Amino acid sequence: MAKQAGLSFENVMSELRRKSYSPLYLLMGEETYYIDLITDFIQNEILDESQREFDLTVVYGKDTDMTTIVNAAKRYPMMSPYQIVVVREAQMIKDWEPLQYYLQKTLSSTILVFAYKYGTPDKRKKWVLDIAKAGVVFESAKLRDYEMAAWINRYARTKNVTVDDKAVIMLTEFLGTDLSKVANEMDKLLLTKSADTNRITPEHVEKNIGISKDFNVFELQAALIKRDVLKANRIVRYFADNKKSNPMVVVLSQLFNFFGNLMIYHYLSDKSQGAVASELKINPYFVKDFEAASKTFGAWKTMNILTWIRETDARGKGIESNGVEDGELLKELVFKILH
Image (cartoon, rainbow, N blue to C red; front, side):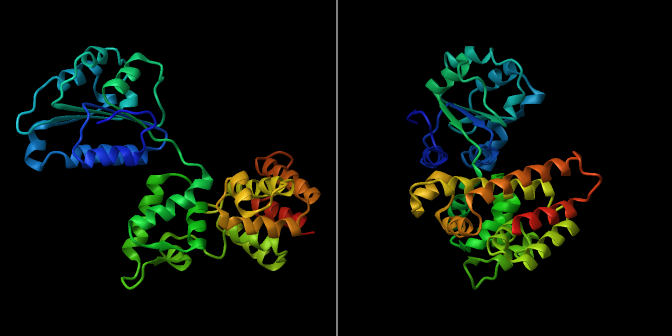
């Protein structure tokens, strides 16, 4: 496999599917989803079932040491052209120095995989640099909030379905940026959708994942923008009655992010859709919300709203709250925003 900096998941998988294998793989990063996909492919797809019985070794970092791993890597395959050694949870390995001896002369018949999750090793370490020279180093970074909508749509396209914009918003708000969790929930939606449709709708999401299509932070923002007092208060009451699925700290965080971006929007010289989307790092679909919100909330009001959200957050954490319930704090915040 050709080596290069910044290999993407697609790069790595393309080479694997072409049966172009490297003797070493260091799969690392905060986002475990792609690390698991690559590791699972190498572990399950290169060898057939009978070959795996003899030529596949899977160990876990907390239960082994590097000397044992190196000794396993030095073995020759018995029933296939390759033997595969997979080290899962490699971040638990304490001493990497013995690997240096193997890196001086790797076996072309061994595919050694390190699945290093939830972070990265010091990239200046000699063993990391040597793996990069002899094999593949892939870093799986966490996606940002604003990247999730595009990711969900791409994932849906690989399954030959589309996702309604509101359904995408519901999924991103409820599931966050954990790709494994999002992919699992998407797969659940695919299994439960009607065979005669290729669309995922808000109703489908509400029914099968338990996210309310009418009572969520996005709908609260929409109600605030339209100054719909009745709807905003209904949503706040719903939040108060469903604290576990709508914790106040999450609601406030999302509101603060929205109004923080609105403050930036007020002072943008170029308010075209593309410029706003680029500056705020949002999907162009959401630009219209900021345009509408700017007409409802001027810059001065927006600054006050950000202050009130901070104060509400502090009170929710026990600072000068006098024991007021979260629902009442949110109700008070909404009243200030709308009046």
